[in-house]
Image 1 (cartoon, one colour):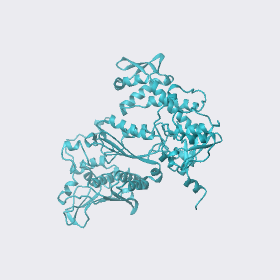
Image 2: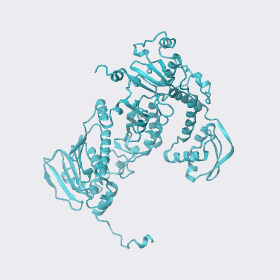
Image 3: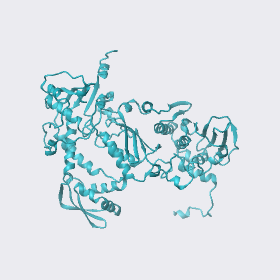
Image 4: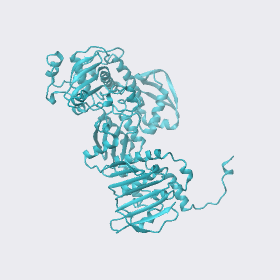
Length: 619
């Protein structure tokens, strides 16, 4: 059956205002959480410092948002609920530099067209509040004075009562409320200076006070994300040109089974932007256990004219004028923190109880934590020799000067078994005391006890040194006995032309055989046995979508990781105190040495407070 046979032949006519609003509501109001989002953004744009959100039956029965913002003038209330009416922009120049959360002027009109709607508002110049209401937005009541506080209250009852097709797709009230709860939690994180309360079925579910000081913000983070996130994260600030990134990064070993604790806000706006999430994913690459996800709360600030927020009906996606710069800025900044050296502050962090849970519990979503680390500059000895990867190697001692050499020597020869009391004399991981069953190193630092998995730790050290050497020798290419011919579409060919020099730098030799054909003559030595054709296609696809690709580096690193695993010191090998202490010093100078190449923790620490608690001392 053809389409033309079922479509009626009718003259073109203008849609009624009510029908046009209902069609617009299909884009703006998908479910109850969409209503809450629009009303919450309006409240924030009004300058409110206190917001109350009350919903019933997951928002289907009732949604009410009350704020103490500037309010709406009585003579503008009917205009406020009409389509394309807003005070937030007046011309195209303002649209290209939107500073408010909402700006399209469709929200109230769309919401009122699919609900029983009531708007009450009062400005500070008015002696009383004013009210208008409507069923389905077709006919509005006369403006009437009512008692009310400064600000605005919007009440939405019986959502989708006149659009049953949309209503039947709603989920159970608990499911719908969970979406609202997560939205409100994001808003509580994005606007720390605003007090927000969420009530469901007349019961307060979340409530936070305004948090202006750093101490109050950390307390608010703990209430919203848990104390483990607070104790296992650090506050960071990065700035380059006119772009600033600030917030909290969780340690790599504080990770999740799902990406349910990843929050990034652009100029205070809640976003779910793939470019930003991909940059952060790459920043944490190589330090997370397989299948795990990092956690963070980050605020990205940049000039309003350099970000387009008008690319998605729900305004969840944004587009950057210089997306490449933003991507690189975030990835490199976060990576520098993830790979910083161990500090005394890291050693002082108490490892949470989840460190000692079973691995299966860890995989089910528990967070594990130790610390995170640091760019390593290879010593002269490291830059002169390549490790014998195919066999276990002797533990290499780096040329990095040890902290407090006399004390280290006393530990090495066994002449001193005491730990110095001066904090400046004690490195973060302390000094080795003994080996446990040839697998773990037991060390003592200023805070208490440190337990190190010597194979996992040495594996990371060898791996990072191998990566450094590979980066210095990456131009080594291996010619293919039989060149590979690739057929690509025109978009992939343009991507290759743009990034041809980058691929050659990595050791690839490619040339065009035709408008849509490439010949591969040589590849990096470490990738000689890889599926080169598929790899290059994937890399070009990455460049088209993300303006970046980590696939080649990822495959090379995976091979180096395997080689490092074979080259690291084996379990059950007896080490001297000098070797154990040198391993601890090398860990303190090696990037990401709190995790092995597979993302498992390499060390944990127990403070004296935790040890006392285990033995119930002082109780």
